[in-house]
Length: 339
Image 1: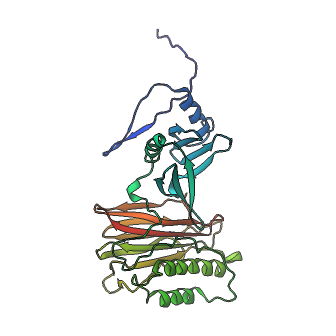
Image 2: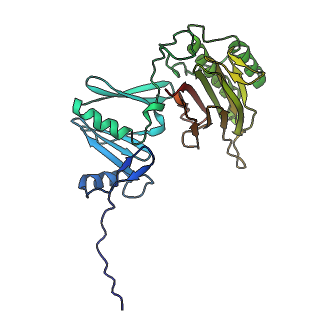
Image 3: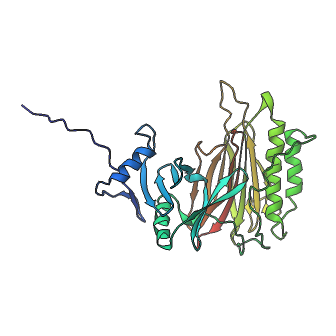
């Protein structure tokens, strides 16, 4: 007869991921008491669906990478700062600190982490467990391909300030008025990015006031910038989920006959959902397919979103602004050559 021995229950080991060029592998390491305790914190005693990936301990911070979040815990503080990986815009090392830019409802906000020089490489390795640095975009727009005039100085999302409108038209008039203003803009203008970002926010500000109260609807605006020296074929832009058509508003550097976005051209894509009810969620998702990339962007970060980029290109986000109440989302995407 077989004999079964029941052993004491032990904490599950933390297994940090070791990414390689071809695939993500799991590296078995010796049991580490601190890693096990951190995993218990990340998963709240195995009650939360998250996975500990790794951590570093600096002179001033405990920084943890989990599958869902970057955790930053200051030594004097008990409460951690949890940042969703999808909200991180960019990171770079300075003289005595690592700057991590995070998307907010009004542009990017910087978190400065003071550390010694020998700690930078460890933090960079931790961040790249979940972030592809080649797809991250900083706020410096000097020498962008396709853009005829330097656009540096503008932070996308910085104009997202709600304003009460004294009067506004119906949705068709809002879209047409925006189209008439944007259709004459081009990358030869010095305030091109500023003016387009202002128009993107005006769309959201107008639509959220038009669709208010019992007729409230979610809306999504996506801006796409062609910062390459090539013309991009737009295959399709449509609503995967929503209650409206997907309205596409181009700048002057777009050929509507052949659906080609020339270098420096910008498209604004806007759509909104149905009124939420017990029968429908009222969700919004816009799908863009080109000859260089495809993406699906939704009204919230938790709702499924994806970006697939073909070889030779890279796509970064200049803005991911999500309304805290869940009624609007605003994205700016920068398409570049992957040299």
